[in-house]
Length: 141
Image (cartoon, rainbow, N blue to C red; front, top):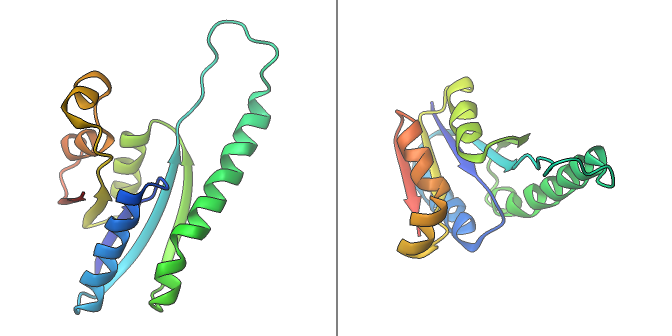
């Protein structure tokens, strides 16, 4: 059985990637589906005693849960089984680490479409995933 990882960040591009994965499966691919949301770690900028990081992490978990619930509706509607997961960490390396740990055969993900300048300055999560993994990555615009 083929195992697919679909990172979800709430963007339209991620939703299109999910729809692409669903269409591929409905065309006959037998697949184990993993849906992941990775929230970046928020690091303190110096000594900020006013920021409660436990509260921030709980807020991130709540946001991820809400996002995953919304993102998985198309899978539910299609009658497909899936595993959903939430992680805190560096986004690209966490996606790749999850794929490796769970023996995923491919990753299907959206591109954010920041453009050449945005990618040059910030880098692209999709680009980082492509360079960090040795499994096939399908990018959906």
